[in-house]
Image 1 (cartoon, each protein chain N blue to C red):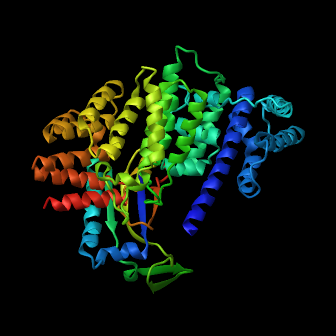
Image 2: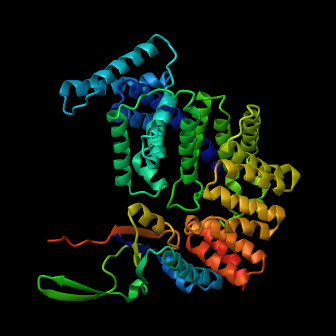
Image 3: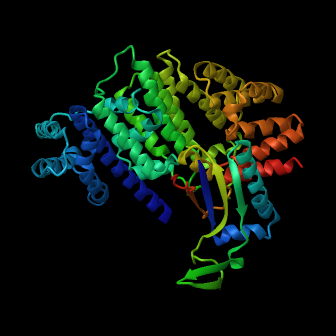
Length: 121
Length: 417
């Protein structure tokens, strides 16, 4: 069963990527590949990506036949999507176990959802 | 000053909450033992218990807390009888039990404590092992499913379903509310102790709010341990479990430095340990050892007592710890105790000895076991096998659930370069 782990980071979380403190910055950057490696060693890694900061986002809205393009992210929330993983695990309990190991900073929010399985006709 | 006043207020609040949970658990046990319907017994008391948790901290604990809760519970049962919106087969038994309880309290009889039966039911072999601890926390302490789900990293809705299913099983499989026969007692008691320890373990990573994502159940597990000891004062393993939890708890304040960074056990400032808890734990294992019937929890507590001894001796007797681990892996060869034995051997005899033991643990048992990789990294570094050490650190860091431990391992790994 595939599950998607969505990682919403706060401003502080995003700021770590370019923290002036070398140690903090390196700690941030080195934690992610190690997490991915742990997923791979466990044989549960499917895919994943980190995302550029929210100010780089462009949003396309489809409204009654019209397309509207906007600068910035869709939702104006305190925490913003910073990356995601797709993992293959037997159940939600295991998915939550892996989600708890995501090395995101304190204040982050992690959402876990099962990937949609199309109905068989 | 303000912090002290707030602390005192929090303590008072906690004492009252404990009193409410105590009475609630007794009543659930009493009603469930007579009706076999745990869910219906909880439901009858749910409103009263919720109101008690809100109002007792303000108004004080009533003189007869059980009577207070029971009055509202009985009213609810009688309403259900009259309106019959919900079909509860056990309603007549529940009402009879509530009447019996009220008569007992009214005539000044000591209200019986049947929580032990309830604990044995929760850890019954017919109950799914993963549901035992949550069931005990809910029925005996009245914790809600959402709180339990957070501590065990389970979807709250799924936890709710698991709990209902377990209660349905108790009712429909006619699992008897009685104490196990003496032949069965050791095995059945083990299951109860395991369930309580699992609740303690859920709180282990959560150090002084280091990780707000998880709220552990350490204090609740200790409450269960204390309740169990009052009910079974002569079982050495019950004392052993409580001692083990108290030793671990005594170090809560020392497990993080002022900057929030992880501090390993052998580097903790012993002045920050709680003397009261250490002394209480020491008395418990001394008393337990007089029974001359060693068990897993007594051994684990004994290992912790050696660490606690550093407070006065200034050193850690690793030889003693290694011996206790040898005995422990014979009784309980869990992955945790096998890793612990290797760590103790490394300190007592050298990194090679520890590594040799670590290598005997089957690989699939430790693939995602964080402590194994942290110890492997540490020992490989000590043996100057730097490449392997780095790989093990990577694995340990990738498996961390807690930022402070991750930071600690990242520093160690960086020092290898």
